[in-house]
Length: 359
Image: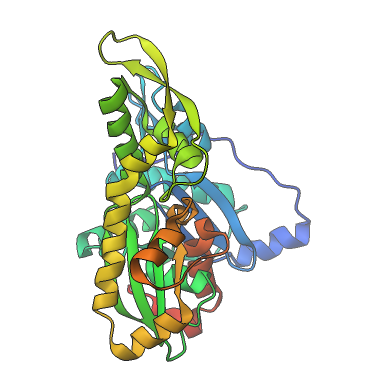
């Protein structure tokens, strides 16, 4: 299936817009910024803000090769479809694992946010992990170009998260950011619009979900789905114990009988499951601090370290990181949208912040 055949069977979005706005939009288009994440994809339009936030999931018709659902609808279908439909998470560890499905997903999302026709195709800035390879960069750029974009620029997610968190990345001071996404966790030291140190590890939200799946399977003999594990993490997950023990009922399949089964689990089991992924993230922060110059270390000690991404919402994580390092950690305001707000600021101020892009 080539790029010309990648079409989507979705109904056009109609909006009531004054004729003069439609006429004006024919000659101009809003440039875009995208956080193409493992768990969720967010799009920001210049001068309009965040205009799309959808799970990075595609449901594909096996016979026709066309997408039947994308985003929230496809996530609801995950694991519940017939053999004729396959649900795919095309992003893995922050990069493209399935090029065709990613292209379909981007096409659909751009179709949602781009109103009408325009003589000018938009430019886009996309946030990518700092450890991305040249091959992976090329895959992201090609997927966007196949979706009707005129020019593609890439920015490291750690830089974008720092900008989105409001850190003074253009000043001669050390800014340290920890971005815990769905597929990768990134720690970086940034100053003067440049990255002094960065490291990306492929341990983040997805690895936490898989660790919960494995632990529940081991302790109870029940296999749960990946999104059920995510639900458990959101409700019971924590990096430190907090007061009274909490528990919930989870639903899955009994491995001994093959029948559906529900079991009760508590927050201690979940915390034990999360220990290794959290410790890997703590170790990456410690390694970054060891590589930091004395001058930058002074700034970081005085200013603290900011945490962004969905992982920042894990209860007790900033407190645990502070105990381990002796440095104050701050959770960014709205950590889930830090990266897309950062790449959005880059597209809004491209002349000033183009040096923050890596391609």
